[in-house]
Length: 94
Image (tube, rainbow, N blue to C red; front, side, top):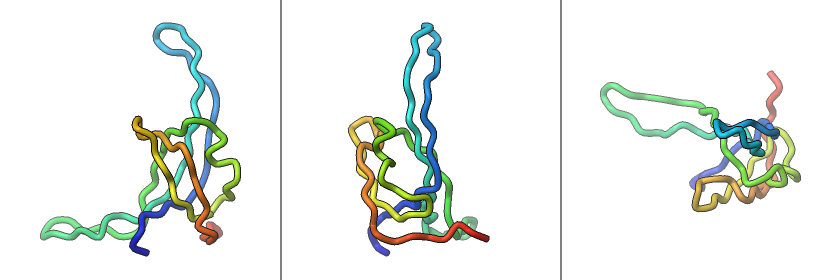
């Protein structure tokens, strides 16, 4: 696949207290992405890397299923604002 894709593997949402004692909501999704195919004399990688991404709300992953390939769209603060299914699943079973 030439286009960047993500494998949706989990999510978390809740609230936390800031240093100023304000309550803030958070929504994070967890994804796997293929590692770069860049190689040099002293660097090689293969497989996937895990990433935690901030989302604008929990609604972002509402229609996704664990193991689903998706395309993500980001806002100007690099938060995920939309996730769309690519219609394919990756098995996460051993």
